[in-house]
Image (tube, rainbow, N blue to C red; front, side, top):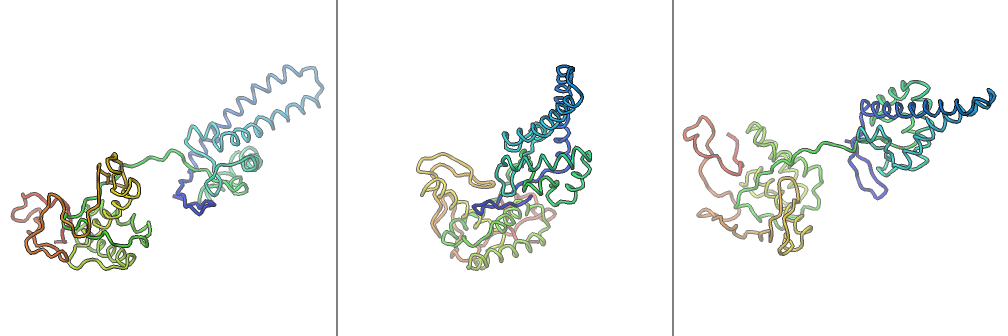
Length: 321
């Protein structure tokens, strides 16, 4: 991904086009342009057979410039960076700040393209694209543009396991404004893949992420709460706040519909985040539970141990073996 910053200081993540897709798009454009040029040339030769050599040469040069240079510039300007080849390959030319290109950008790209594509058979353009970190040719550098992919495959949202019921609503008053998006992304990636990690490695990663999260929020993690469960509960609290902002004070907009608010989460009708320490419907606190420590419970059963046929915990938040 390439992060671009707009004039409004909004970061955009755009995927620059690779050299093979750009080369295929240019090849399609050139084939179409040369086919049109040859057809127009045959018609001009047939209609200007009575002209002298100088006039015929002037008409030939004008048709060359108009069809192979002027038409591509006009097409990119009117289509906001999408020629026929780029539309076929799912590409688009945009400005460095992510905005649509204008006539001056297309003009510079077309003028420089005559040298680096037509006159050198694309050798200069290929070398420049390979050297550039974002795959830009010289025309893009001088015009301040970038070719990006429009059709990006989307992956299915990974499921984030919910926290234990006795942690629901425990972090309703936590200040999450200082947590950067990069840390949220790292936490979500860990929660979706923690079942695939070695228990010791996963526990160490959860402790490190929980420490970073506690440092950003200014409040230490509750003593005795497993770090993975703490991370899942804080992520759930953030999702609940996003739901309240999107659907109103009660999260669901009164009798509103259901809609996704993040990877693996959706807002049920009439959803409202529980108050801190409030009991969760359908769940009972263990005997002697004070609310500040992990409630006692049976030890987790791992494959190979006695009673391994028992069902594993539904949340998956267990200490390492």
